[in-house]
Image (cartoon, one colour):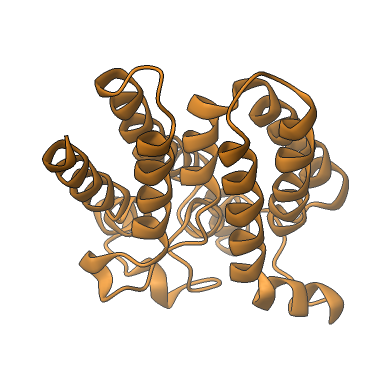
Length: 208
């Protein structure tokens, strides 16, 4: 069994580490996304820099990077949670510290959403709803992401029948994602945080 776990864990890291935003920005605009906008190779920066559909595609693929390993683990080890938790956590860490970009990755929001969509579907839906509302109200993806990280473990504690280990994981991952947002929090406090803006629209306005 341990061989299966180790192989699945390795697969989870290598899949989670795929730098989706970096690859899409290279393909669409021929740029290194790490040298533009916030410098983060995640969906939000791709959305602002490259455009709406590039950002949405990045978010969806990054989510699948977390969703797929967890679903495979739940299928291979039915009725057990620790293998799925391990694979989900490793996929998130792979996204945050990807071997393909010298361990400089994204903040883990989309990949975490994919992981918990498989483990905690209803709490994840509530967290995503909170994310959308916050972005709509304040126009800052970071505010939505941080709020979602707080809503998920709280709602997960009260909703659904699952292992307490999943609640511990959602809390730990939430805190880690918030930690990765410390630069955003500092910019928010200084009122310098980048707005949620479609890069394609911005470029059109610049050429008017």
